Image (cartoon, rainbow, N blue to C red; front, side):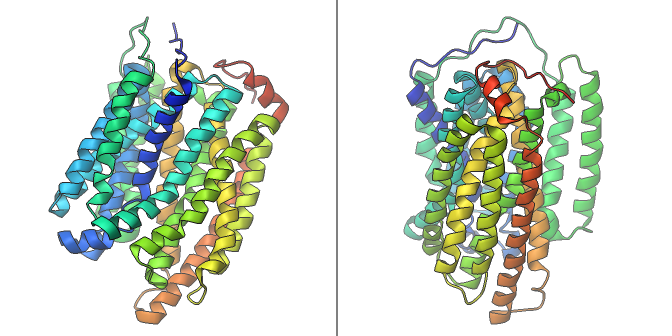
Length: 482
């Protein structure tokens, strides 16, 4: 028998905790960017290896997401949520206390595993505690506002903390925050319901997909730094392909698979997972290239770079709320079409500011318009990914969509970093600054073009009238054709 979700006695406070948990996850994706130079100087990191502080988190967060999603379904969503936050707090404490490159990278690895447990647990709690339709849409908008804004606010908070208190503060800030959320969750979020059936854990599937996904993300993240012909990169790519192929074979033969492929017969989940990939490959890479422009080209300090992200953060937050209202009233398809269209226009306008002689005011209109479109798409794509999946499988559905999101970010950064750096070899000083700005200009235009592909993905969803029909049938799998 599937597990019947328990409605929260205090839905408002429950949603606040879940939104704060998402903020912790999102902040850590970007919060260390502006602190990297200080970390490198203080810990003796060579410049070319500082990116390991970022990539260690991304690699392990991306590689363990499917495992995290299945753990939510089998072990209990609240248990995994609380455990992930405790892991976050402890690894953040270790990161702030680190006095060597090895320790800080190891701390980021554990943070990444905590993130892979945290994101699916939050998604599955939102999607099971709030029934499908307007209530879930509203909950996802609140959660989405915390997540989408957190991606950008991470740079702001990182700048403020680094300049005011030094780089360890970007780690220490998580300790009281994650600890307080974990403690409050025990009293506010309903306990995990008792299970009436015994389910086996798919260990072969878990091992093959986790190792395969981790190696794939490692190769994509480190490829631009090490070179695509590097033996470590070639070996990681080859091993990841073998392991992921083995995972596919294991899942077709497992009585209780880690990833039931039948879930992708749900057109909404399939489209939602594809859109999360595209979202992070386009919208999701912009903060990185914007940080490079501000610091490497215009010479902004960590604090100035952080403050520059305030306007787009507010725009994204507004877009997430608009996305919920549009989805509830008009349906997923028109909302995603509009969000991607607005995002593409705003991002194309943003390219005008990627010039060595352009100031922040030239960037601002594009940042605001692109941010609005980004917020609309963020909320709508998670509504799509959750629609029509039964409550007892929301964890793995969220894990699947989260995995494609992380792969999108890794692949997007890998490809666009190569494009951005193509004309910078052998340059220095003003010549390097201008070439860096020109490379960013091309990348931003390409991401705007990529957003137009989102229009095609949105068209695969059912019309708005069908969305409305689904909204009144909570947790009932869709009747999917074709």
